[in-house]
Each structure stands twice: as structure tokens, then as C-alpha cells.
Length: 77
Image (cartoon, rainbow, N blue to C red; front, side, top):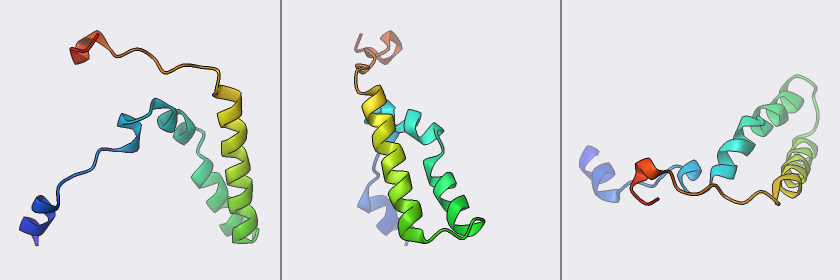
């Protein structure tokens, strides 16, 4: 089992590909949607639609910000 997991390789976390994923994750959109379903008894599809709308609103609001340059500590800057 361990051998198969090792041979399958690893995949990097999303935040290593795009810093905006981390910033959006800090908005806690997943937890807010789950809270709406579990505690406020909102239907799942409505909570997901709200989460997508919130994510899209965030993306349009932050679309003007370019990605930061690589850090000199990474050896690429």
C-alpha cells in the first residue's frame, strides 16, 4: 500500500500554483457554505450557488491585482 502511494507520486497544493487560491481560501467560503447547510438548513444547491457567487465576486474584485514577483529566496528573482 505504501509502495503504491509512493509510486503514484505527489501533487503540489493549489496555493503553490496560484497565490490567489490561498487568499480566497482565507475568505472561508467552504465553511460558510457548510454552515448555511448544517446550521441554517439552506438547501445544498442554494448554498453552493451562493459560494460560487461569492467566489466570482471576490475574483472580479481582485482581478486587477497582478501576481507578486517570485521571492529572491526561491532563487528565481
